[in-house]
Image 1: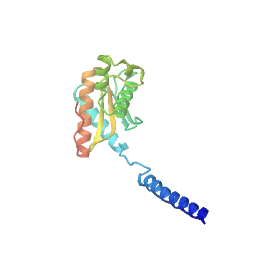
Image 2: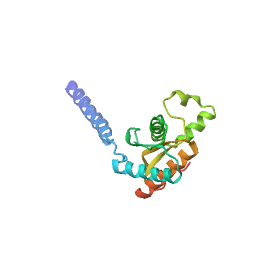
Image 3: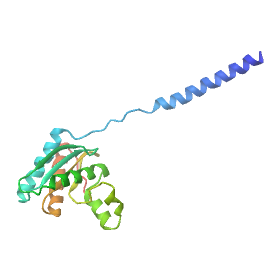
Length: 172
């Protein structure tokens, strides 16, 4: 009889423990839903950047990546250097993955945070996050003939994209 009561008590405790653990594990959602830039959104950002570049007479390479840094769209305008597309992709990727303008990475390197140099991130100005609401959905990178013009074009494209999604761009 004692053995049966012990066995029953152990079974009951195990049953309670199983329910309490299982309830906690099952309470967490195993997936996360995020927004990413679409092909249409990438085209809008590229068109806005191209229009600004033409107004400034500043040919450039324009890259748009999704929030994970994967290339969605690329434009190489006539008159830019052969290496500019790679630089534009790197700037956009850095901005998307670090969720901030690539200018901050350049500033960090210039101020002595040299670990960024070996991290695989592009420590050059011209990459800016693209926002939908308060969420970064991608980034745009610009590589032309002048870093200040690159930043101007990237910021204009991000602002135009934010307008189409009804949000404000990241301004830092």
